Length: 442
Image 1 (cartoon, rainbow, N blue to C red):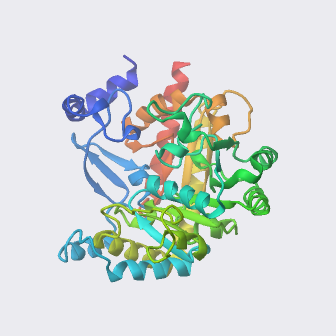
Image 2: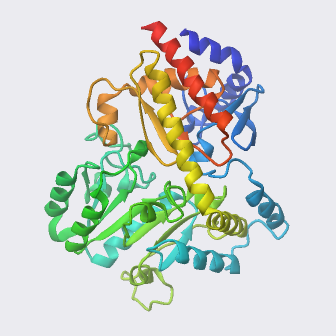
Image 3: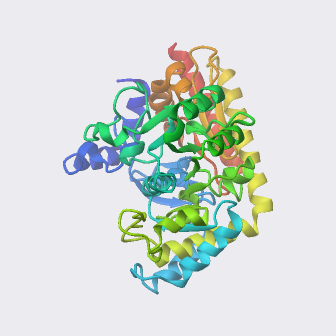
C-alpha cells in the first residue's frame, strides 16, 4: 500500500465503514460517479463557509464547493436565512408562483441573451432542451459539440467526453442517439470552422462551454469568430453556462468575453445551493415551447421542466443569490479574480520549487493543477488527457492534499468568497508539501 493511501485510511476509518455499507446498496457505493475515488470517498457530516468536516472529524478546505455551486461558501446567511423562512411556506407546491416571475424578470435584466427562459432542475435537462430547441427552430439535425465537452448525461450529447474519444461513452446509448452529433476541438479555430462548414445545410447549432473543461479559457477571438461563423451558417450558437453563469462575471461568459448566444443554459451558482437550471434565449426560439403557441402536434417543442421545477425553495434561494451578486458585484468579482490568480500562481510556484513540473490552468475563481509529460500547449481537454499525468493528479495529488486538509477535484476546483487569505496560504503550502512528498518518491 502506498504511504499516502495508508495515511488516508488511518485518518478516515468512519468513511471506510460507511463505504462498505454503501457498496451493498448502490453500484460502486455512489449515486453520482464523480463522487467516487479510490480507495473510497470521504463522507461529509458538516459544512460551513469554506470548510467541510467528515465523519471522523477531519476538517478540509473545500475546493469542490458543491460541484462549483457555492460562490459565497457553504451556508451563506444571505441565502440560508431566506431558505429557512421559505420552508415555513412549504417545500414544493407544483403550481406557478410569483417568485418564478420575479426571478425570470431579474435574469432577463442581467443575462444579455435572456429574452425569455424556462426553468428546470438540472444542467443535463437544460442542455437536452437547448439542443431540441435548436433542431426545432432550424429544421435541421446536426449538432456540434467540443471533444472533451461535458453537457450532462443526456444521450444526444454523451459523445467524445473522455479519451479515447472514438469509443462510445456508455453502454445503452443507441448509435442513432448520437448519429447527428459531430465534434470539434475546443480552441482550434481552423478545425472548428471546418466542422461548421462540413455540416453544411444540416447544421442546427453548436453547443459550447465558453470556458472549456478543466477551466481552460478560450483563445482571444475564438468564441466571437465561432459565433459569427455559426450565424452565417443559419444555425444557433448555444453557450453552456451551467458552471460559468454568474461566476466569471455577473453576466458570465457573455459579459466576460462580450459574446451573445442565441441560447444559453445555466445552473449551479444560479440556484443558491438549491436544484435549478434554465434555458434562456431569443423570444422566437423559446416561443416554440409555449403551451399557447397554437402549433400543431409535432411542430411545438416539448419541454417538461420536471416535477420539481420552480419549487418555491429554489426560486427564493435563486432570487437571494442573484440579488446579492448584483448588489455586490463591484466587490465580489474582483475579489474572486484576485483569489484565483494567487492560488494558480502560488501552487505552480510551490510545486516547481520541489522539482515537480506542474501547470495550473484556469480563469477567474476556477483552477486545475496538471502534471505535463511534455511541452504540449494545454489548450483543451484532449491535450490534458493525452499529454499530462491524469492518474497522478486524480489519485496521488488528490489524496496527499486531502491528508493535509485540502479537498480537490481534478487537481483544483472553485474558490468562493468564504475562502480567506489564510485558506489560500494553506492551499499553497499544502501543494508545496505534496510536491516534496511526490519528488521524494521519484
